[in-house]
Every structure is written in C-alpha cells, then in structure tokens.
Length: 378
Image (tube, rainbow, N blue to C red):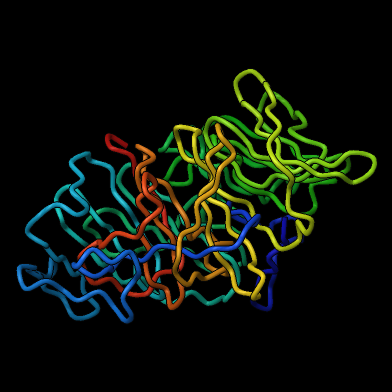
C-alpha cells in the first residue's frame, strides 16, 4: 500500500496517511459517463453535453457563488432506488440524485492545502476533511458550505463508521487511536487503539472499521481488538471479504479470497509480481466482483473486473486517473450493479458491472477528484 504524503507547511504525524481501495493486478481502462447513443462502448471525448430537457435553478438569491440545481427531467441510468452519488471537485461538492435526475452543485471554499483529503457522506451532509492542519468543510443538503466543528475540525484521516451517521476520526489527544464521532464531530463513545507500529498507512477496511499494515502483514482494528487479515498484502476490500496477495517461502504468489464472516480462504490464480504498482482495490457489496486497477505493459493504468467465484477477469477501456483513484475516486452502487470511477481530466466514468461496458450518465458534471455513495434511507 502506497503512502500519500500530505502537503502544506504544517503536516500531521506520518501515521496519518490514507489510501483508498483500488487494486493493481492487470491492465485495462475505466468507464466514462458519456458514450455514444449509437451503442458504442467507448467513451466520447470532452465533457458530457447537457440535454436540452434539463432545467437549472438557483436555490439561494444571494451573490455568487451560489448553489446550482439542475433537473434532467428523468431518472439517470434508469435507477429507481433512492441511493445517491456524491463527488468532490475543486471548490465544489456535487450531489447526484439518480432516481430523481437532480444534480446539486454546492460551492466550497478553496482548501489551503494540496495534501490528501477525506471525503465522507452521511444521511444529510457531506464532509471534507484535509489531513493537514487546515480548515475542512461540511456541506449539509441544500445549504451553503460551512467550517467543520468539534472533533472533525482537526487533522488526520476521517474514515467511515459502520453506522452511516458516524465517523472514525484521528484523535488529537491520543495519536495512537481513532475516535468514533457523529457527523457534527461529537464523541460517540468508542475508540480504536492502534499500536505505535501503525505509523504508516491507515485506511478504511471496507466494513466500517480500520485497517493498517505492520510487521507480519495487514491487520483489521476494531474497538474489540486487532486481528491479522493476511501475512501478505491486501489487493481489494469490501463489506463481505478481502482479496489478498500471499507468497510462500519460495516467493510463489497467489491471490486469496478471505471471507470476513467465517475466515474461509479460497485460493485463486497467480498474483502480480510487482505489488508496488497496486493501490487497494474495491470489492462490490455483494462480494462477487473486485475492481482492480494497476499498470499495463505500456506503462498506463487500467481497470479490470475480477469475478471472485470463477477468478475470471474482464477489462474496461478508458483513461483513468491513478492519483484520484488512490484518493477515493472509485465507488460501487449499493446493489453492485454500477461502478463509478474518476477518470482522466476528472471525468466521471460509469461501468455496468454486468457487462463491463461504459454507460452514459447523460448529464454534464464539473471535474471531480473523489466520490462517495449515500445509501437509501441513510
């Protein structure tokens, strides 16, 4: 897992480094949110055109920058469920209500650091928390951005909790712990102790807790204690399982599917020889598919979908943004049907997981760098 160094003159301790899940095993590309209506599976160049039926309004009469709401007049991707997609770009948070076809763009003040940023979504707001000692912001639904408060007005990573209204946040008072807080930054009564050895990468484990690498492998940390996941490296994580790369005494390496609930391990095919090209990949909520991102023989980066039951893979073709992927630029829909990824130029790529083909979102969006999903009902 790769360390992401923070920017700015006043940097947090080295332990507060985040990486997000996307892996690197094979070559391939990503999927874009704009394909030709003729049925072509390849993304078109340039921004997605705004259909004439869209209607744009301003929710507040005050001076610019203002909250801008666009109504496409129809659902996006034919989605009827109430989950929503959020994106963060330079000075903007975008809320995409796919079932309603409504896109809300909320302006956000310029961050005074170019370092990594935690981007989380709760039942009624989005949180932007830089890892450096600079101000972060909260964007409540339909409201202007305002500065974070409480324990969230600090530095270090903020990682999603198992409850969508709670967050694991770095604790100023204890550098070797993550504290559970609500979306307003108020303590929720739990903490996760971390060993001093966790002075490297601290990431979300895909199921609402914390994961870190250390001597002997990769570990999952919860309030109840720490347990080792693998003696190797984690290639991908999700709510139901991990995908690991493990090697024997002769350095013969394989992929291993690890069931979170019962610890059952299934060995797949040979693993990539160079794990340093990989960031952590994302496993779909149903546990069937891992989205894996890594370098190709030509030196570019690409996306593959790996079926964990059959160990077969499918490539998706489109340019991707590795830096954005490492910083949270990939998310699955709750039903595991769609994969959303930030591509080259900050464009949103939409992959149909059933076919590994690119689909057209059908609306214009600003360049994005991070993504998050809000489940229906919270």
